[in-house]
Image 1 (cartoon, rainbow, N blue to C red):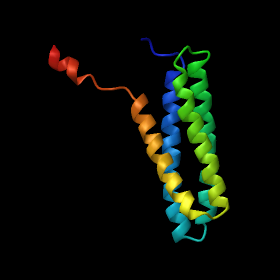
Image 2 (image 1 turned 30 degrees about the vertical axis):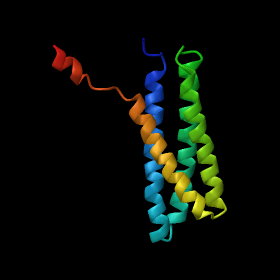
Image 3 (image 1 turned 45 degrees about the horizontal axis):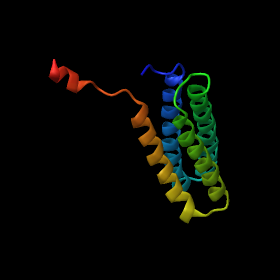
Image 4 (image 1 turned 120 degrees about the vertical axis):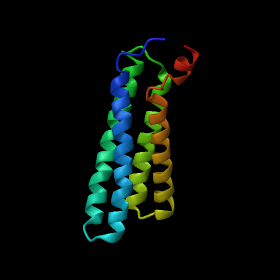
Length: 128
């Protein structure tokens, strides 16, 4: 099956989103340890939201004009909804929901990243 036309854009968007979610976890530590941590954590939350929107746009481009599978849209939409919920939980200071959802989002973004990255062809080298 040929690679859809916008698939490299999707890969980059997922990698960016995973990196932004990781940075969000780092800034959560700053939130606990420094006076300016709340501001940095809030700014990085907006970056996660922007990366989520970019991921959704890339998934739609892979699917609709790119001719790729529609299954790329649901995880992108799910992570975007998770981001919005995460932001709401943070604003409401609901740490009992905020932290676990953040961990789930990071795990989901890493899982998606592993799914779209090219695989090594070790088995074909052994067969040759």
